Amino acid sequence: MSGIMLLVVFVISIIVMILAITKLNVHPFLAIMGIALIMGLVVGIPMKDMPGVIGEGFSATFASIGIVIILGALIGSVLEATGGAIKLADMVVNAVGEKRPELAIMIMGWIVSVPVFCDSGFVILNPIRKAMARKTGASSVAMTIALSAGLYSTHVYVPPTPGPIAAAGNIGVENNLLMVIVMGVLVSIPGMILAYLFAKKIGPTIKSSDEISNEKIMEDYKKIMKEHELPNGFLSLAPIIVPIILMAASSIVQMAKYTGTGSNIIMFLGTPVIALAAGVIFSVFLLLSTKTMDKFNKITEETLRTVGPILFITGAGGVLGKVISTAGFVEYIEANAEVLSKVGIFFPFLISAILKTAQGSSTVALTTTSAIMGMYTDPHSMMSALGLTSPMTAVLVVLAIGAGAMTVSHANDSYFWVVTNLGGLKAEEGYKTQTPMTLIMGLAGMATVFVLNMFLG
Image (cartoon, rainbow, N blue to C red):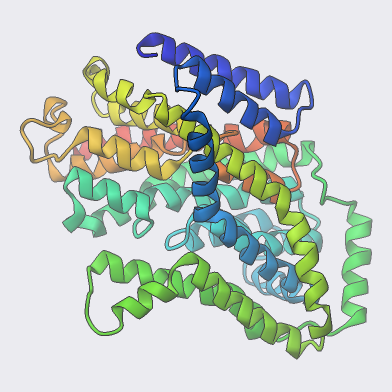
């Protein structure tokens, strides 16, 4: 199948999937897998190829994020069981103030996601989010939205996150990454402000499964404080900060294209799986310091039970994305790119937003759209056809693509399921929080790029 019918099938499939989850109460795993299978057959993927497509989509998602989720959740469980999460919450709240917990967690996410994928970052910081919500009495949902927004901003805008780096290379500004970083930080700010206001407004209207009354919050907090002394601040921070440092070091080595002594070791240690494994090791030290090592096996078993549903739903989202890409959606966009080229710097935003919404991955949207645009110095590229030929405009195109790459997060995005499941939200609540939040931030980012282009382009 090709042409406009491909788009029609895609839109209908997404609507049916959302209705199945929200109105018919079909489990997200079954709804996503069922729609992926039906869509694949309708668009013409041969039946003999469908098992391979499903297997590849499922396994690829597990390979990229499965172990990361398990290790990150295990670190979080240890922090919760030892009181380490509450210690960290105390440290952050004391620094920022009890009246601004949403802002504190948003800034933490914004910083962490520069070197770390947003999925991994949410898993790492989620225990702190929960502890801060319980300590301050803030809305758990507002804290979830704020953390998600902070992580998402730098994930799509600021190198050395892989997506923006790849986009910068494809556009031809890989030697001007400092400007991409500076402008990426600037473009992220308006979206963050709007996301913060959105979180404060909608958070109190929705109750997550991990949200309890303020009275119960204070009772639990006082009980924990009586039962055991909170652990050392450094030991509480180490399981989180060590993986971040390792991944950041690896990103810097790759960005600088350093190949000298120790580069291979740094890149190995900075692999998310290895970095989080190091975090688990430091969490063992935390268990030892609090004399709770005997609980490690039970904590591990409970963690695996908790992350199981998240892993399967995330894998199903990967299957849906693989079916869509196999159906030829990306090729259709590339073939019809000239029709959309009339809209100037909005063109890369629209292409990226369509690809993001269609297949779920922000990184894929960033890399594919930037490849469609081509080098700004190539006279035969789409960049030249649109008149986007100055170095500053090229930087802004990278950020326009980034804005599109966050518009919008829904059921085929692994980050959607990480945020909703770990945030204690149902799928339909995710569509009321995570999805509109990413829409608001994407549009705000593009509006900022447009204004900057008027003065700097």
